[in-house]
Image (tube, rainbow, N blue to C red; front, side):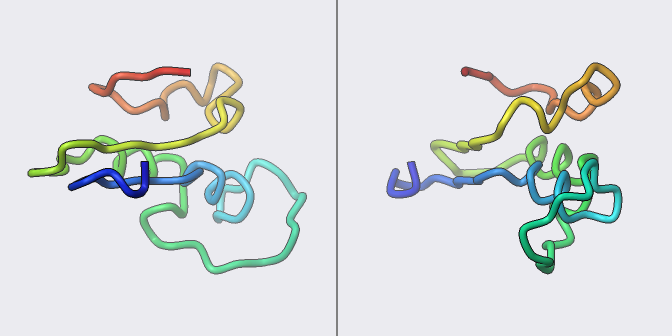
Length: 85
């Protein structure tokens, strides 16, 4: 996917928020890292995924479902995109 022409590819942005953000859902950390501002919280990742990527032929994101589970976190699942597992 990373090599697809005119594409944007993301890998586990929700994971950055889940493990390392200020609202981390776990205390388990492999090592502390600096998280990009647009991946700091689950809400910011949702906004990142929902924004328009004008001119892109493909926008692809690889995530783990448990980052937006259980049900109280379903609100972070991005709107308006096709999903596939």
